[in-house]
Image (cartoon, rainbow over all chains, first blue to last red; front, side, top):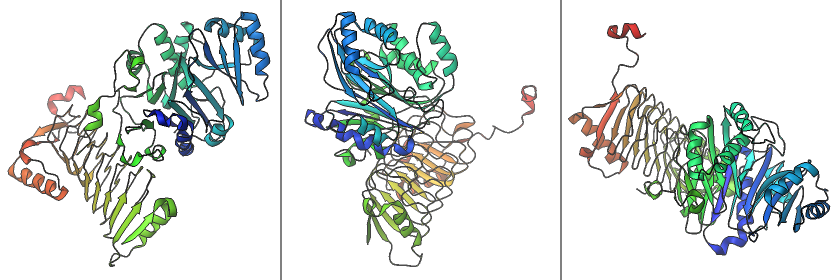
Length: 317
Length: 227
């Protein structure tokens, strides 16, 4: 099971309503994933020279201000932290690698769940509605969001096993399905220096993409190579700084639906998650083809927009 | 005319009402509003009703249908008209995977595209698709007809039995033991009849016929060494 949803607003006038529009999408997928939920929201990009980290701790009483002060002193960098329940959004002028290293050495109980210039990742165990409310996402503004509701199959119900999984700067992945070669692939990636925070199969898919992107492979090529290297069932939704991409395995037995109007583009595991969006009844609705990369926000795909219009228009009879 | 709003009465009330109608009644016209992509709407109807669903539906809409005509003013999710026995199911938009799966009879019309596994294990149903169908369509199709006015995806008619397939556009690939077959006057007549009943305007001459080569499970003495 598991449910995945993505919403990209084409109409700027809707940006203030992003969190409110996305909420019923995620909640509608509760039946597919009542164990944990998570979202990635793209908003408030930081100025050049700064990095935005999404950090998480087991406790919602963690002293993020003290952590930020220590980090700033140690690395002589600016820090600004906003706490949202168990998560802290840290904006810093420190170099990304140095911050990661300092956190690993000085705050090992902190997990880095995402980083980049605009992405913020929030995920926790519990029902999607509770998770959404804990992080105050109802009033969130922004351009796009992706989300996941998890029914755990391959690994335990933990925050670390919750989606989205970061796959690089401003990139993250949510997955519906199960990978059958994740143990072997995890060992291969470990030998290449990739680190893991869980036994989760989807984290391996994310780590695979991270590793490919680090080699300088474009996201589009990395996704196409994933079709060869990942064995199992998957529908992926990958959040990027400019939008999101969707990929299904060649068998395509994991559900997925895409819908588009002049105001928005949405993807979901089931159409009912899209039905509450304004104008959904008149939207173009179609099923993404297997082994085909679809994307909105062409820049991150090496300038290649993959949302080929023939897939959209072919259904008009 | 009876109208039910899904948001007001919910799935069970809708299906209970439709399933409870006696065959011999004049109370045959039903409209369902605000389906909001929810699942299993109008399943298990046994009476000759006319059911109009105003909007997009989720999975398994009009499953097991007998006698009723169900029209969906929108798109349909996975398993549309699954195991249909008789009657007509028509979707004005696209249908997701496994439309008409295991159907024993009746007519399923998809005016837009159908996704993969359309008509999988069909057992007598007739399926007419105005657009294209995805991969593995008509897999193990036993009886019935599938008419595709657009293109067919990979492995059309894999392991097919005696279902008859008509495709106007391109076929990405044929599945195991599926082959192109001669179109006789008898087949043209059957195809013309299906298109007319479906109210889809397409020239019979533009179609090619596919079906079983009937070799998949036959022992062939020339290949004895391979067994």
